[in-house]
Amino acid sequence: MKYILLLLTVLVPSLALADPSISSDSGRDTDTSRSTSMKRDKSLSADKARGNRATQSDSIENSRERSRSNSRSNSFSSNNDLTDSYSTDININGLLLREFSRRYERTKDGRGIAGLYFSTCRPMLNAVPDYPVQDFTNGGVQGRNAAMHNNQNRGYLISRGDGMAPPKVDSNNRYISRYAQCRMTASYWIAEAGDRVSSRTVTDERQVQSLIRETFGEMDGDEGVFQELRQRARNAWQDASCSNWLDDYNHYKSPELDCGVFTFIGQTFTVEYRETLSESSINGRSYKISMSASESESFASEDSVSTESRTSHAERDSDQRERFTEAKKTASMSKTKSTDRSRSSKETRSSGSGFKVVPKD
Image (cartoon, rainbow, N blue to C red):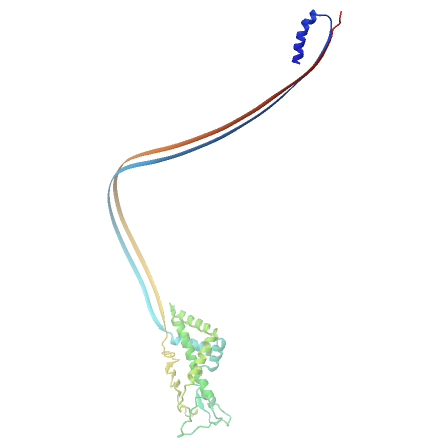
């Protein structure tokens, strides 16, 4: 296009001066441009720091204190004590025997196998009525009352006669062994109750009677205790050896039963050579229970007077100083790298054609 404009500029003046003519021109221009640009940046940075700090502190304190105290105390007291106490031991052998006889022989309040056994053989109340004697009328050994009331022979009883020796006594005789073992078991039973009761402490005699009843009740409920004591009587009777004490009803004066491990002579029982079933001794023991009571009255009065005065003075000075030192090192490094590349190219193409007609003269 540029070239066409230049050509027109040149031709215009010539046309003004030349002869008339006909001309025609044509052209084409082409421009091509290319550009390439590339840029690279790289940066590296590093910082490093190190420091130290030291602190020193000084403190000084002065204190002064002064104190003065003055006190006085007066006390007045009086005490009045009044004590009334007593302690005594009660022999409970008689109470044990009376409660045993009431429970098992009279009212028959005893329960279990012990109650049935003692209410049948009645070891104390039937000691004389059931005393073994020789029954010459019917033969064998019976209780004294039963032998005396034997009326099978028109009311006459056979006696051994005067001047005749008493018959020999066999410890294996069923009636004799039952009679003896009944009293032996009763001795062990009452002694067991005495052991339990005497370990307690009471304040009056009514409590003793109540305690004995409770103890027999506890023992009735434990059949193992009765079985053990009953077997003990059987075992002891195995060593029995009887003298010729057995007589008939007519020659009986007083008990003279003597079988070694069990005797009943006069009014005294012995079991395994220990006096028993009496107020003085049960199985060789005198059971006692402690009864104690005390009353006390105390009165106390106290008067006190106290005075106190106190003076106190305190002073305190304080000085405190602090110093510190700090050192710090810092290192820094920075590195930058940049790359810039650019490329450019340009291409121009042009083409044209023209014709001209001029008339001739």
